[in-house]
Length: 216
Image (cartoon, rainbow, N blue to C red; front, side, top):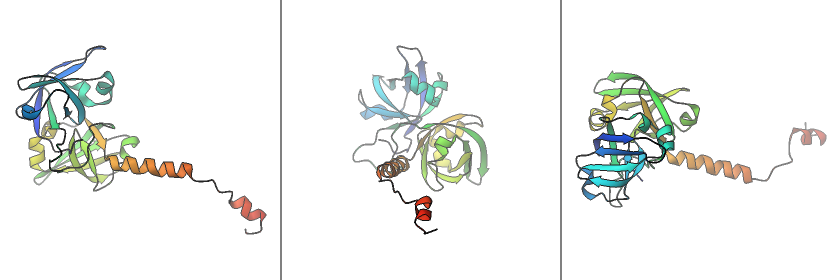
């Protein structure tokens, strides 16, 4: 589990894509101090398992499905990425519950300055937007952000200078693809409601029954 509070920006050293041996190698500055093989690191919000470490570089295997369904497939050597280690039991919960399993991608459609802040508007499909609520949370490239505005086709977030500086958002341009993970609580609530509705006994009381019995 992650919190969406980015610890540092890393740099892609190598990314290899093929059917049998796809992996990514990322150079870091500080987060590998207490990382061991098998640990999880969120890379632009995607939970990856560390399979090799060489000094300040770690390697993670990446499935073809992950490359297709996330923005990781568009990375290349030299690309910067957001990095966060899995949350420790005694850590501070500064963001929101982030699983590292993204729901899909969106595209930056607008970037506007607003005093010290910057507004990013992200277009997404209905499957993503159904879980986006104003003043709720979402992870954008692994960054825990508060939703400031929602429409039928996009949503907006307002980013403070510290967040922009500590993440790769400041280097994003209009048209760039970002990974999106919706708040998992909303998805669980929806599933529970659907299960309850499906298991509820069906009532024979309808308008036809009422009419036949003189109530309409």
